[in-house]
Length: 114
Length: 113
Image (cartoon, rainbow over all chains, first blue to last red):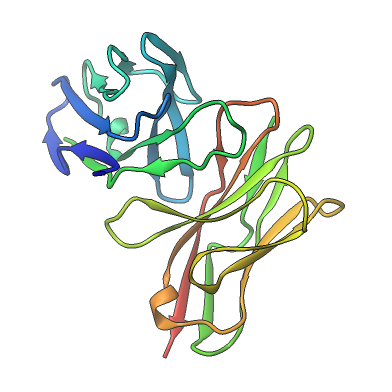
């Protein structure tokens, strides 16, 4: 199993540009989520999905869109990038609603918005 | 509101000495508690979790954590630190009736040779 994979590893954008951060998992996990990591703030939840076709907002959803057309993929879209979105983005997955399940994280995407 | 606090931004310890990384939480109901570690330019890796039962849980790489319900704490410990333990450590809580994890701000551990 590859686990949770993310592409790209690093991206530079100009203000106003759009892009999609890709996330895929091969563990047949129902639950997937996107976090951003900023210094001194830990990880903050952007969006999450409890299964294909179902998404919901997390703590900091503004400026981001998600979709979940398949169990495996959970892309994160920035429609109009802003410097405040400069961050490291992590995708995570876990098996399901079982309370004991551990989250598995991807390697991250480092995004710089100029 | 649910929250997780890690009161120390940085913890320095000499190799071979015991280490403690502190975590306190505020959440309604019985929480599920986790520790993750992040090495440079890597994603978060699971260390250990407390769900129920024995208050002392053992995890990967010789780490353990003690759940203290009265103090709402879940401190991470290791009897003898290694230089390779140097990393960023995150405490996380998942409320019993919630779907999502809440993470602390992280504590950077430096183990000095």
